[in-house]
Image 1 (cartoon, helix red, strand yellow):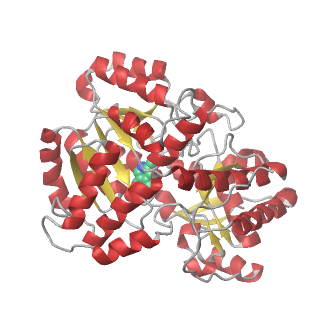
Image 2 (cartoon, rainbow, N blue to C red):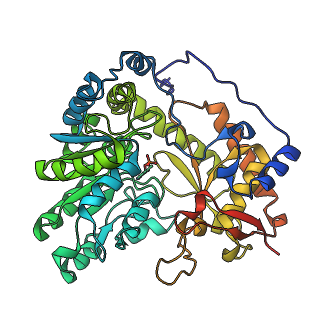
Length: 459
Ligand SMILES: *Cc1c(COP(=O)(O)O)cnc(C)c1O
């Protein structure tokens, strides 16, 4: 018989988690203004809010924590990370930052000015926030298939090269500081970008003389999908694929809280020494000196190790297959989830789940709250609340997709947890007709409102 697949690690330390009662959860979510970000973690049984900074470090990473060099300047841990960045991504210049948005803030401070356009594939919310904060505009050039949950395209993160070409053709070069490609594409469902597409974007970037930057939070999962789905790539190692992916880019930002498998940290990688020098000024101002950038030495050392572990095939296979296992369970229960299953998360189509709730009452948020009440499982809305208001008209934006994201932390939960999550959702699915009210906004911040929004039950 063919041997089944199992995790390439065993458990050395455990952290207790506690089940709670439905009555407790109903009270807690009400007290939290029906915003899952406002819950205490003790009020959550299985936490799928994010895969960001929630992964389990390995024994090797923990030993790097002990070896961390806490020198302000020139720390040995910095040099470990610098050499990992060079070896894995091929960038000669790099700056550590406190997390991904710190990297965006530093790099965009150099490159983005008011009136600029930044084309890309469904920019991540902090990326878009940092662009709009500078009175510039993010232009989404993702392929149309990405917005059809049921279309089974292997690379739904791909950039539509015609859309991109048009933007580059009709706008003056001075208005486009760079193109940003997100790997994998988070906002449109953890969907990968193919090597061929990266090559195509890079060719356009070069044709118009515009730099190409990767938002690289889940670069390793992207490489796994290239290996498993793209023609001619199956026999390459993950590291070879990563090296080729990044050979087409001029720079990168990264939240190392994802495929760095650490709890905090970020980085910027660059080819140009001039850009490195300009970015260093902002790094020192916002993040810290160029050899630590808001990270402790031990954090940089653990990250260096994490980058190597995240680019091992066995780890990536177990990771992606656990996510797919959950996706398949939900599909078997008749629940519509985004196809194909994403790299770090399963995205439930709330438009299909709760079509009878008006979209103005935030379908995906309604579903996320019901899932929490049902099983103590915390997911997150990726829909109209996160899409925020148009910066000019201040009207609510209603995106094509209303999704609940169930992000799976790396190396944290077991397949039993996946069964529990699926059963909780199946219960909500069975009583979906009884859910007749969504939510209205009681308080919202002017930017990135989903983190702090307060809601009340719709009238
Ligand atoms: C998480 C993430 C960011 C922001 O990184 P933080 O570490 O949360 O600041 C940027 N882009 C993508 C694609 C991300 O997933």
